[in-house]
Length: 118
Image 1 (cartoon, rainbow, N blue to C red):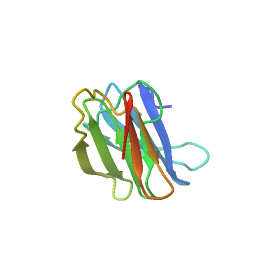
Image 2: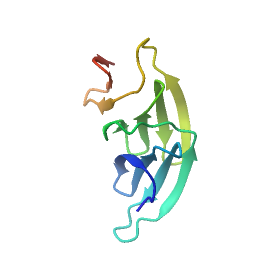
Image 3: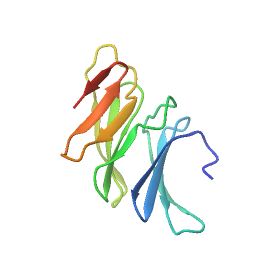
Image 4: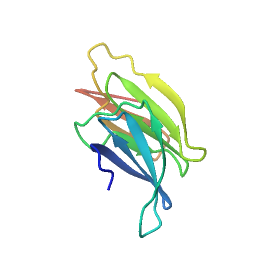
């Protein structure tokens, strides 16, 4: 459906899902209408990685986070469709943010090679 190198996929809320496109450095936004799933838009210059499919996490019905290469960690809004914040994690030997998990008590955990951080 994306016709690109999709490396992450996340349902942010029942109406919207997003996916990261590795080669084109973007995140696509799709409407979940149950039939066609039209592209709503995208955000450019967002680096992802193709290692696994666990580098996105839902924060709430409007905000999600995405991790990628070169220690980048992004906070993204669905409405309005925009990048809220771009962070760089400060691990010396880190190349990419492998996994992200949003816990039930409000913490976001990231896995960076052999390390887990909050």
